[in-house]
Length: 371
View (cartoon, rainbow, N blue to C red):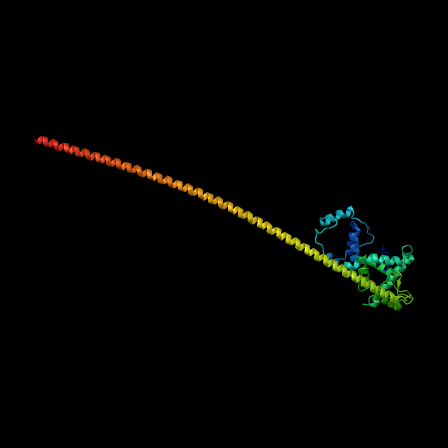
């Protein structure tokens, strides 16, 4: 559903314009100038906007302003070449993103928002599509939405249900988030928050009952809100049956949500077990690698020890040979000196013998002379 020039898109029933601040207008122009995202991202964006308080809180925290959106943006099933190029330039990664860039935490409840639009479309289709071709019917849808805003303001904390047609207009209004916030701010009203309903988060049947009571007080001659063929208006003979059916649907939804939560828990446990097993495998691999390195270090130490022993043996052998050579040299030197001593003794002995012979000859010569 598009947003028209009326109380839903920025003008109330009297035609007063809701004007955007210059910064908001500049941000909207920037968003409109970017390549439109593919349907998968657009659906998540819409689901986020359908929880307007969470959307505003997240936008102000991340951007300092509410990120605008326009239903005039084109819808594509796959990322366009322009979007992929912009994505790569903005995030330096491929599209779709696969975890290379840290993502911000968002306060949106995806379980409530993700199936709200398909559920509403089914309800609107079951109610009436006359507004698509008939301007008067479309204006009546917007009038119903204005009544709902008035009734919700009157009811205060009591929860009301808008009915399929007004809910459609409400969805369209919320997907123009800057004008949605400005609409209530201009009227000095608290911004009307929205809880998306669907199979995962079925509406409380009491909300339609509350709406019927509010319509009876504020708009006594106007049929109260309805969804599809389920009405709590003038023909309410099946209200008890509807409440029982809604209770059953809600219980079934709760059961499904519990089953989904159990499945997610089991999946998380399986992932944790798988991660623990991977961690153990990495630890075993680390220990095996450490053992291999220890064995290699031990083998290297043994090799170095053997080399050292071989070196020591060779050095000992060389030292022993050196000592033997030194001993032989000393023995040879001693023998030489001994030989020299013997030679000297022989010389002295020969000299002594010669001296004795000379003395004996001299004595005989003296004796001869005496004779």
